[in-house]
Length: 258
Length: 166
Image (cartoon, rainbow over all chains, first blue to last red):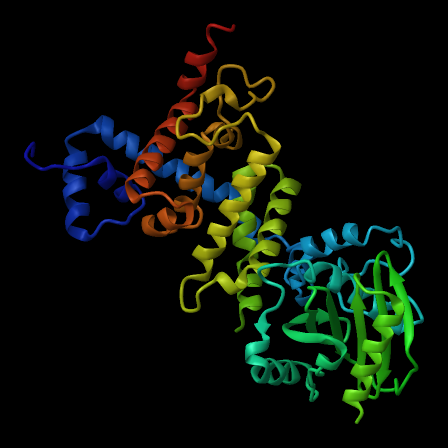
């Protein structure tokens, strides 16, 4: 029997019942001649049983709601980026619109003015993504057709990325964001000087028709927003003044409503 | 079944492992929550067709290691952590018979291997992948963890260590 080599790893695998029949039999023969070793392995198995008996009941406990909520779609919005954006925006409006991204269940906004909430979301998205140097967008302007087709499909509405070259801005690209009413399209534009504006486009609940331009300022982010039939728009920039942004907003509106 | 549903199905197993890993129920669920949030945000890194469970436990391991580093900068995750680096539970005296406490006294890395093998019944290869260590290290940690636990359950290790203090 002394010629049979049994390694410690094999003893462990034997403990776990993971050896094939042949090696298992070899280990058993080896242990039969070594009562102290056999006792050790028996004790390992007993402890494993006790471990399972101690912790297996956790499997039957009801799962706390906070854990399943962690998997709801809205938390896929980059949470830490959102918090960072909060600080970037740098103002104390915490009590106003209500920070609902941490709420896991979709529900209607607390404020009556749905548009203001959209402006708020758009400002946060702008503050989050416009400083990005390497990854400002998910899909670049070089694949504009694909970008627009993709976002249109996800929003369930035909979208267009307006051409703003006349206003001095060219398309950088876009990304998909989660929003209150479903996916949101986010287009980014940039001027020759590197200033950026973003266009936030979301689907609107039926009933909203058209609104005039409205203006909001969240920290240093200026936002013009409006609703046009089934889509809500918010144009944001932290770098250009209200008048200039208004001109761009007009250009966007004109393009989308020829 | 989409990934979200599959992740939901795995929550009880994550909780079982976390409970054994960190002991305290609320702290264990905090770890599970952080793990799920991270997994959900990083789901695009999961490769379709591979073992979602193994991937999820990898995420949990990384989250746990980061949390331990953040909250207890002095505690190392070295293979051979001093045995008494863990606070001795009050009044346990010479004999550590309570399995919970014995588990808590294992070096963190050995504890992780033992629990994945014993509770999750994960293959040694999957454990190696989840913890990003060679399979030989899995086997040696498993062996050491079991032997330490056995001695602790016998009360010998504790007695030997604490005799001087008493």
